[in-house]
Image (cartoon, rainbow over all chains, first blue to last red; front, top):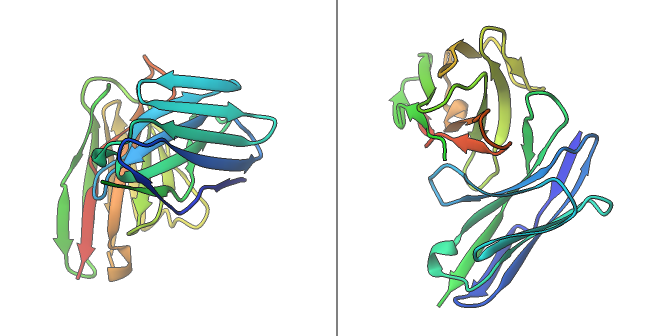
Length: 111
Length: 116
């Protein structure tokens, strides 16, 4: 099975940098996703890591260490609109490629 | 990115009735779609994997006779909540992967079901 842990809530200041951690224990691993979800809306894709290392995409970066079962999402130059829930999800090794989602981290950005 | 639609966006029904939710991939063909349920302030819980032309694969604890899934074409999957009860009230979201791209899932906008 899959076990995914993320902090429940985080608060940061506009313009700052925040790191959201995710640890996982899985029976099969085929990649890790980060999604952003605003309240009442569907999740949107942010990043996908399948190999170790850092993937940078604009203000957002994601890091993966498979040996440690660890990932983080780094958000730079925070904006008020970044206030949302951030979901870590692990893709399993089935052909369907289904993902198991963590409980999400609710990020609040304050002025 | 790829677009997934859901209909209806909101539905209110009486206890004991059945509700059908449609999930469509608009600009790609999806052999596999996923159905999730999300309760307030909780994460997505995978209910089932919908496979085009075959039976859906349900997650442990999800009643297949209560949540009927039909994936009749490469662009349409439906979830029918049968004999709905107030505890079935939730946010139902479908997703699909565009086989032309990566492994990320594209989510529909969700359906808010309220059972009175």
